[in-house]
Length: 239
Image (cartoon, rainbow, N blue to C red; front, side, top):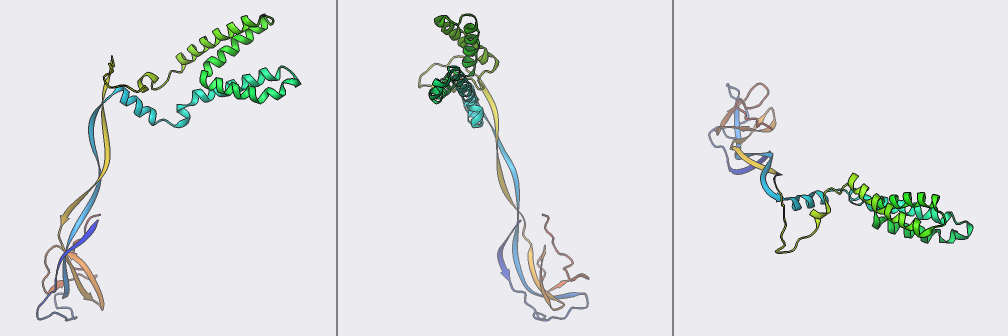
């Protein structure tokens, strides 16, 4: 709530400056100020807009946390590093010097290929090596097939949300088939100021104490007080 002084008048009359209370419980008015009461109210301003499926997908993607956006490459890198570490460790003490390069390479390949391809290639590759340990080309081919199948199954179980096809940038004049549009409501907060009343602030003296109060009408030279020393017609603004 705000208070803004607009104008001021000094009360005049034969009793101005007197300090004694009248028989009716009134006291002299020392000064009067005309003020304005401003009430502030918080409200939401809403409007509707039409957005395409691509705009909506971009908004959803931008609002996602960093880990949600990149959890697939992160998981793929972790699995790739573990696979590289296991393969290097299986070759004995002489291969320990290759652990870090192999793990780093596995992390990079896993982050690019994705967790589904890494898991599928490792699963079928290990199975093929168990049955045909001496046929390296066959094991490699089966591992490749396992990676393709694993990647497809993983994408089927955990599809991208939103789809990557909707996040691809478009070119001017490009034809976009099967577009969908949505009606969305957007709201923003706004503070509205209402000037509701223009009361008078009265200054007077009661029991040796200078006080002030708001009254609705111009009080004149004297103002009537109640038992507590407040104006009878005091205006108390609502919060």
